[in-house]
Image 1 (cartoon, rainbow, N blue to C red):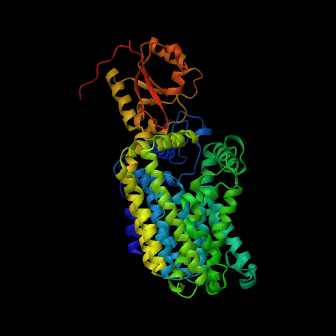
Image 2: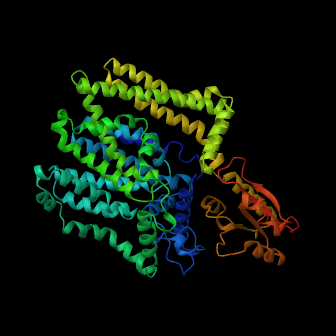
Image 3: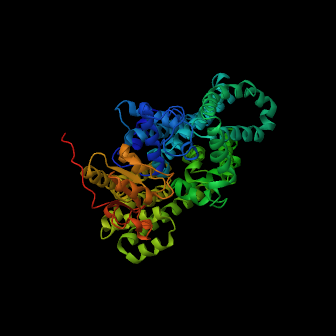
Length: 584
């Protein structure tokens, strides 16, 4: 267990403070935590930021009331040590959630089958690059996933008679704690347990098992954990938080109404899993079948649990109208358990189970082929401008285009770099295939884990800095800040753009988000005419389309680099007289 904790911690925290805030989610968490650390600056007519996380006092409740507080409390608590919110403290709760999730998966595998299954499953999860990326990003889902997985671990231990019945109450308590992260914590644990009891009703007795689950006192425990905060938030806002959070963000996402209109197909998660669970996804179909094979009969009762956990979660999130990749993270612990059991079983049965051996060989062949294609794709991206241009034209999302362009520019003329990024997976997959053919399954598994982690580490070292230049806004914010200081200490910056949490966080007290202004150009005209000093940040497209034509005397003083995912410019009135800056 110590080995897993150390490995997972290094993977989650290595270089986590080196890159700027990448996404709106990260910056929004940073802004919420910063307001928690500055309660004296918060206006008295808004709910306390410790009670209801809010990224700005200047925006309406419909934008400010978005999520429960547990993740933001954790960020603020981590930031108290150094006295300020940093990229590391914003990401630390996710990193801790990732480490704990790896450990919980180990304990689940150990209690369901045995120590080795738990170890293999934990290593599978820890070496899945997309899961690793989520564990290194400031998003809520790793914390949610560990709350759900820990709740299910308590159920498994109590149901199998490993520990006291008090663990059923802990199951309900952890589900309640999860609701302080996201409302999904109400659904996934209860859905998983309900499906499992139904599938096992003939063997275990549905009503007898349900009675052991504490169906009366258990929900009371859940309410005791979850209800106090939800009731306090409801009363503090006169019911506005409940209407916005439960009405718009929970049920709106579930039904695809309002701003959360469905934009993806019900099968969205099938191709998403092919990417997000790589390289272990090649073993997942066989792992799902393995549970039902005659040879797995001794462990069937145990492995049915991760089976219904994974399949039930997939069905639920596919039925929900609003879909995002990271939502399925709560089920990827189950996928790791299924794959871990398959690989653990194969290590023992590779000489006797001919059918499974054929499947494992095919899976490694597919993995090797995909890895070779990855090498070819990276080479084409860096060496063939026509391939890069064709891919850019095929992408609709501006962020995706910026990422592809940045990676292409990074690899341009650097064959060695393209090979270095993709070679570990390709060489590891081919070498693992050779080991499997020689019936050295343990070596093949260990090599796949190591080469996948190596590839991820190289990606973090070589590619992430380039991505930071097209996703981060540090350089642009520094340029805007320098221009504001040059023009005088009272100069303000108007963010005349849609939500841009990264820039608002970086500019801190100098920025104003005047979303209520219908015509910010007219406002700025009056302000500058009265001698007040302003800069304005807007989207480059809006400026070039003439939306700011009535401020024609203003000039561009800073802009995001070419190819940035969100092109922006900073405008300033050149005729404005600069104020003298104070000497330090």
